[in-house]
Image 1 (tube, one colour):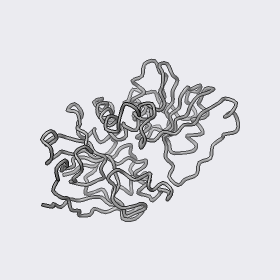
Image 2: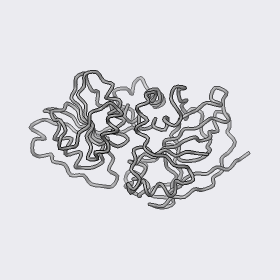
Image 3: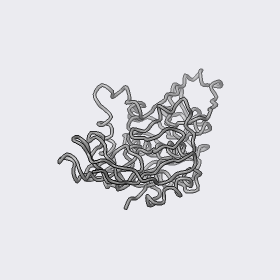
Image 4: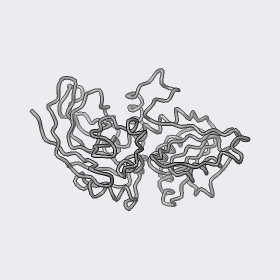
Length: 324
């Protein structure tokens, strides 16, 4: 028996709408999930909403359960928490996380959902996809005890990285951002905050997540000799200019990319994507991470809310969407 659900679709760049969709009865090995919350990350998702995915990256940027194609119409999203209403007895009634778009009900393979630990509230679990990005980034970066580290860019990804780095022993850590309001977020996470001009230099590692070439330039300027910038920003179809003259070569600096779509080579042999996501959910037991959820609205309001998130009229790290 098929049933009706509602989903948020990007009808064309800058314009979204709720559509009625048909959800089939789950087959063997599948689950029916009723969504409790989904999340909007102001980085990648609002870039998609503006139509900023370059043609060369459209295949790479597909979300796991995306429908349609860029620039639209497309159903896009990857932060979804719900309750399994039908499926294997080991999952029925469980709260689960899935990399699914904004939709009230959906059917997917049972192995595509990961149970949320009992100690993690469902409303906080929407952060799992971004904390997973931070886990992968730190597997790539491999920070050491006592490192001098800066995170440039206090958005959702940058703050998630800073929150995890705050647990490393002996590190000197700063969150660097142009927005003084991020100081309160940094304080909630137990991290020092600095404006770009006041940030401490001689860093062994700088994690860059501002999605702005000025931030990347500042990140290079904060490095000690032979230091590394780990680049987490995704610029879509924008070109980036960097000062690779000056002292870049004489100081033997490194710029390294990290992207969550590929498991870090440092852990690829022994862990899969599900292991990494389960670790991210376990780390969300820390209540300080609630500071990354900066707003909430009803699912029915999403067509009006998404343009305001994309323009910055609604300032947000993670904006949480609540379902009836």
